[in-house]
Length: 104
Image (tube, rainbow, N blue to C red; front, side, top):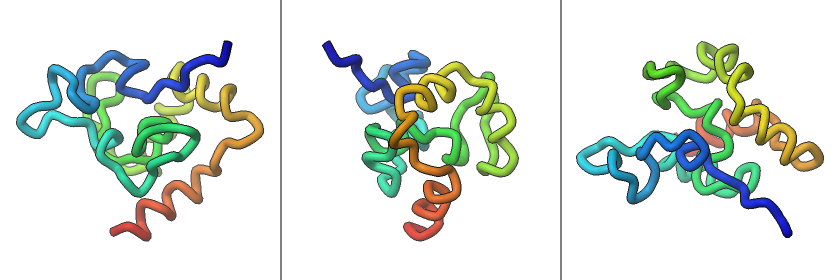
């Protein structure tokens, strides 16, 4: 049986993903709405590339841009999970950042 690839909001249980209890009235996580990353590492929008999305909640705080937050993300158990699950197909961080910038 194949394991389910979780998006960050599902893994973290933050309630800020699509239809989550905290998603109403602008409470949706930016990773869940970052359409330029849809499909990245097998996720919905930025759900499996949250470490390159600005404005996500990390360690209970609002994160900054990739360059400022990646050191925290590399210690995250979800980041580690995606790295393992996508060992052969992991999209390079620089390419993910470029996808976001190209969409702006």
